[in-house]
Structure formats: C-alpha cells, structure tokens
Length: 221
Image (cartoon, rainbow, N blue to C red; front, top):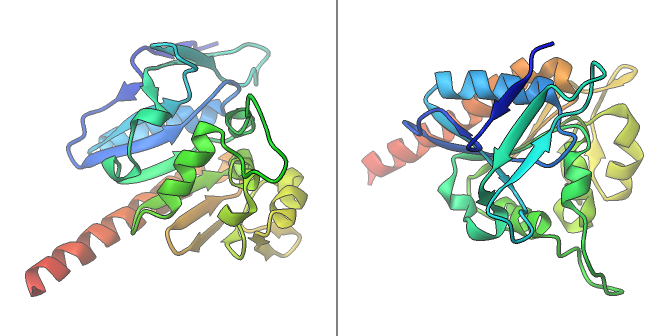
C-alpha cells in the first residue's frame, strides 16, 4: 500500500492563485490525491484548511479504505485566520471530514451553528463570484445551517439525500440516481469520488470563465 503525508498542508505554487480545501479526519483519499495532482499542474496551489483548536498544526488521516490509513496531511492554516477572498475557490472534501467540521463545543437553543468552518462557509458563500465546490458527503457542512442550502440545486451521495433535502437543498436526479454534477451559480457539486476528475475540470473551468469575464469587464471600462 502507498502511504503519503503532505507535511505543510500546501502543494504547488500559487501561480494563478490558491484553491482552499476544507479538511478534517476521515477525508476521502481519492479526492485528496486527485486534488494534489491536478490543481498544481494547472497553476493553482492547493492549501488545506481546518480548525486547529489552538494548535499550531494538526495531522489528519484519510478513510481506511483498504484497511489502513494511507494518506495524512499536516494542516497549519487555521480557518479562523483567513478570508475567503484570498482564494480562487473553496472545496469541501468528501467522506466524513465535513461532519467533524460542523461540531460545536457549546450550543444554545435557537442559535445558528457557530462552528468555525460553518462561519467561514457563510462568508465564502456570500463572497461575490467565489466558486464553492462540494463532493459526495461534504454537503454535510452546508446542512449545518439551512440558510446555506435553502433553494440551492445540488447533487450528493445517495446516503445523505435526506439530510440535504431536509436542510432545504434541491437534489437533482438523473434516472434512478443523483446527478453526477450540478452547477448552481457559484456552487458546484459532485456526486461522489467516481466523478472527481470531471468535478475538478468543471470547477476550474468555472473559476477561469469568471476570471475571463472580470478581465473583459476591466478592459471595457
């Protein structure tokens, strides 16, 4: 089995900018490996982001898909310390990581979820023209606050359909399955790791189309 560790939570040079990826324990290793290969080759640095609970860094492991935790990432970027506008796009990685990121140490009746990653995602979704990507189970993070999903067209893993629809999301279906990919404004969602290659291509295309529009608008003015 191949075992890999990303020691500084970043890979590639930010020639064209940075793609921020929210991550925690039990992340999807297929997506992790694909992100680390594809985006840097296209000129984008991948920067992994999490809530570090007051630590300078934390190490997270992937799902034990083959009976062993094969991939690890050492994260040094605290989600409380960054701005969504520092990135060209934000991706929520799949598997169980996003469920962990919506955890709150204390709660109050009637108060919206205050987990740092949820607070950050509220800011990211309200940042004009910033592309947000979700794949597989990662819509769990948006389910932490129905305001984040209400009326949005999305796709997701079959086993969280009820969660997503109860949070106000409109899941798009194709025949007897959820759609492979859905684009709803600045939110791009993918069904599961089996479509990660197409997801990455579409996500990057949405970013670069937006960049082109901004450049044209700048020239016209």
